[in-house]
Length: 154
Length: 154
DNA sequence: CGCATTTTTGCAACTGTGTTGCATTTTTTC
DNA sequence: GAAAAAATGCAACACAGTTGCAAAAATGCG
Ligand SMILES: [Mn+2]
Ligand SMILES: [Mn+2]
Ligand SMILES: [Zn+2]
Ligand SMILES: [Zn+2]
Image 1 (cartoon, rainbow over the protein chains, first blue to last red):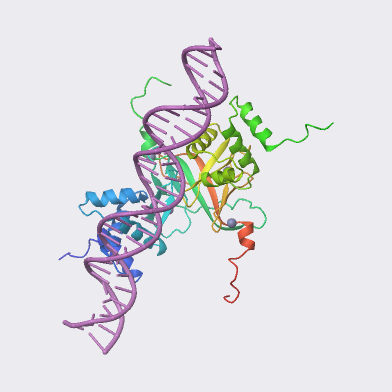
Image 2: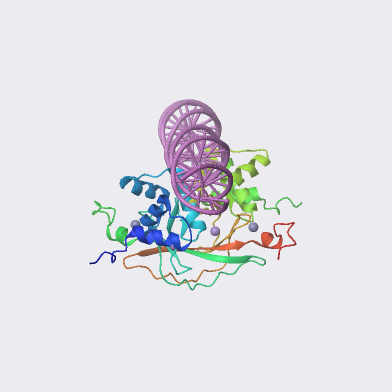
């Protein structure tokens, strides 16, 4: 028999929560599942839509609270994009990483690799805790697919 | 007689606008004056308060529109802080510079100096336009003045 | 289990930043 | 000076996120 070899997203999510000794509430598990499946950081709105599409919409406030809780636990982190919307993604091992924000579709990606850049010179008295690096540009999809329909202007 | 040797902020602001061949409207001049006098980037709110304190409050929408216009002209630039609020400051010569956001008072400063950091490695197909670097920490004032009243815990 | 305590959840109302529509005023153009 | 364009003011709106409070789980303990 082969009953165990499929570690579902649900299982992964539950495990992450139990590792922290926290109760695996449905909302938390569901949010983590969605984040585990995501290829880019997700906004509150996209999480709500994804959950609703799955037939289990969550309450707006509950979702905000779950996200805040997950961030406080260090399980996820959030980045505010240019549209002033926070996007959330799993906090993976690599503690310091840069981000990429696509100016076309607005998606935000966590980049792998160390960001060895030296801290810029600070004015006297200033204390640095952390350096955030965000690359702006076009993601692979948007770079490959121009705005369509434009062939005469060049 | 010595009537000319005082280049006021008002004059500087007006000059900046005339250089662009733009009309120096009162709102634009006033916003530029405030930004010229500021030591940190200013939010819409702080600009409104500063203007109101000076006895000439501006209309909320007009201020937003002036800021958008100034940004479109390249005279100012805006950065969204962790609180999702945009802060504006004069666009000085140095085209690429890093920013500093104080986690205590929330103020945002433009840092001088080139930010020579190499672009982080991007996934295949991704195109980089610009790299934003923001240092998070405590500004000189906040680093010097601890939250007060705490002397027994250490 | 039975019951008190703590944690989560749900809903409504609210805050704050920023936008849109439209009418009025000011500036520029001819 | 009149027509056209640019700038302003006000009200209503959009939208991310928060707060207060009560109902519903989950937990702890005898
Ligand atoms: Mn990330
Ligand atoms: Mn700057
Ligand atoms: Zn894209
Ligand atoms: Zn500070």
